[in-house]
Length: 79
Image (tube, rainbow, N blue to C red; front, side, top):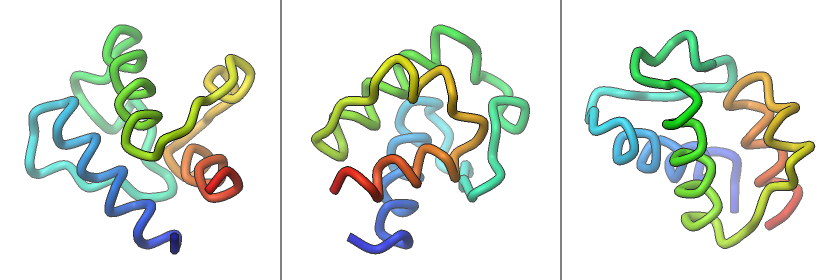
């Protein structure tokens, strides 16, 4: 899976979780960039990303992610 395909999948998940078809994430996207991204939605987002890509993040990975690019890095290493 290419990085572009990973971001296509992430965009699908973000649009679904936040119920906003206009969301487009990139390497630098953070919770500050998306209005409804709070701690509860973060959990929903992580679960949805894990389901989409058929993997599980560790607690350390989840707490260490600074932006969507770092999330994509972890996904890329796992698949």
